Image (cartoon, rainbow, N blue to C red):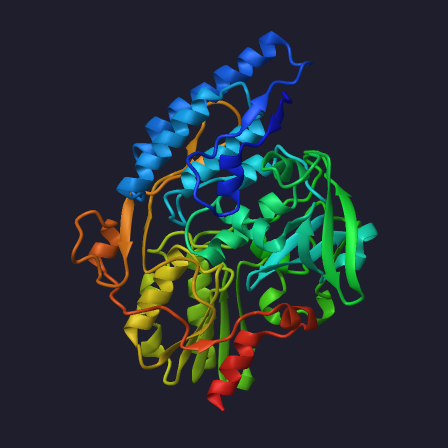
Length: 459
């Protein structure tokens, strides 16, 4: 991997910590051991990516406001002028900042493609509320399980949260779900001026025994390194490649049903405690273990066989897929249930899972009860375009070209996604009727606040 030495300008630091800034571009100096030929290749690749980004992202994505697009164009020009003077990691992170100016959850630089090329500390973080906690760790760091992140190399959790949010668009809770990509990599932290070294960083955690400082070295990129996203990380189900070296904060023996069996995308269970059944839908698309058409048939068969009075539909870990797959199921479900339907939502309820929630709530607003935390996007957002892969390297960008309006059913717009124009959703809000956030205390004790709230509501 080509390496350059970098220092950060005041402008970039200001952006990282949420202040007003003219540009995110760092000032950098090439390391002396980089050959002229290698440096030329680095510069050429970065210029190619900037040109491709301008044509295929900045000029195509519809979610930028006029002002944000102008700012993004200015930042991109400045970044392109630094081609060859900053590392590839720093360059990619600055592209991520430019993408995030759109402030749209579907419009984002694939941070996983950056993290896959960078080192990663031997811990995994998850966000509860606005704080980050260790939910997985290697055996040598298992004393950190359940600990809250306080700072990294002297940068407070608040500063780190702001830096993470600058790399991703959408609502804050959705941005925070992606922040693990930054916080778990000394190399990425260093590129943003948040760690002194790119090889290791000094983390400070709050534990039951008090504050603990730990210098964590980053494991280099490897096909043998465990990979997981924010939803899978929460489940105590072993992740491929973890083998026996990793531990989880949540004991598998006391995990609530909602976090068990991560390999099963679609499940259901009897729930005598609610006089009904619980349906768990972790995707609105086909999965490796089951096609969604078969999953919905399984759900319908369960309803026919059990004749439930009430139903819980858990969409908290559903990141979306295809809104058409479950639309009819959602719209007709209230016709088959005499009692109430509870929809569990949270920051991980995204894209087509939001559509599914909307169609269900609209079908029977008086009997469909949303429980949990707000979904991961606004009532109006942009989506519907395949990712664009940059020509050099592994980076890719998700762009958005069609509007979704779930407040007014797209009546005032001509640029909406056709499927939501034909079958619109028009609701004042999808905010929870019953707030039931998943706190770190509930998580560590194996409790499910959403199900607890449902049971309490039925009593």
